[in-house]
Structures are given as structure tokens and as C-alpha cells.
Image (cartoon, rainbow, N blue to C red):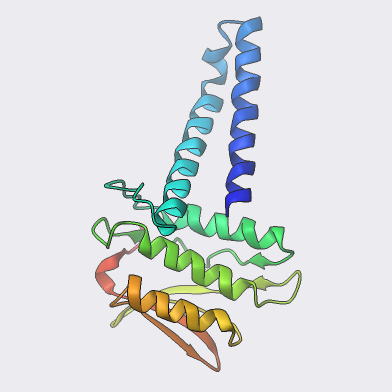
Length: 190
């Protein structure tokens, strides 16, 4: 995840450097390029949240009270970029992703769990293959499901879910794997 985030930081830095150079030539250029500055700010904000998510999953408490309702969108995009660096891919979601509830754990566990499951399952795919996956709401809550063969990582992930994400459940069968998520933890997409 870190190489992907560093690449995105580099892209944002290049944009800001270009804007700075343009302002040296034409001090009024910001009036016409303010959209670029807004885009760079949004990108840096998203990268900051993802870095805090990564640090929190590594033991630091950086997210604190910051919550991102739309946090699954950048997590899924980051997982896709990570898989693509390894010659695999992640299929686009079939519909808008649900929002994260603001009061789940310390704020990092659920998006980290979703990202981890997609990444681990994606790594089991053949080179150049895209992992198909779904997020669906049912009477029992939410389910993130994908076809993935059994792997050593599945047992580690199952223990992590039991420790960090209970009462969510990790389920594995012949069809693949799924993360069962309590209904109150996600919000239906608009």
C-alpha cells in the first residue's frame, strides 16, 4: 500500500510544483487554475486518511476521531492499484459502495478489513485476472463476497477478524470467501 500512496503523493506534488511555477509567470493564474488546486487538496486529504489508516492498522492511533463516510471508495481504489502493481486487478464494484458508520471501533478496522480481504483474495487470482466481488445488504446485515481459493492467509485473516472486527465474521467455503458485516456498520449508498 505504501508504494501506491507514495506515487500518489508524488503526483500531487508535481501538480502543486507546476502551479507554483505558473504563478511565478502569471500571478493571476490561480484564478483560472483554482480547480487544479482543489483537486490536489482533495487528493492530499484522501492520501492523508489512507496513511492514517495504514498507520492505525500498524499500531499507531492516527485516525483518532476522523471518520470518512465514503472511506471504502479510496480503500478499494488503493487495493486495485496495489494488485495492478502485482500484475492482477480488482473488478470495479457493480454499484455504489455503502458508507462507513461513524462509530465502528476506532475507525480503521472495518475499512482495513475490507481492503485486506480484497487484497488477499486478489492475490490468489491468476496473473492479469481481475477479482470479481460484491457488497450486498441482506436481512442479516452486509456481505462482502468474492471467489477465492483457500490459502494460508485465510486462516490469519479469520483470526484477525475475530480479534479486531468482531462481531463481523469471515466465512470460507468452496464458492469463495465472505466478510459478514453487521447492518449498523455500513450505510446504504445514496
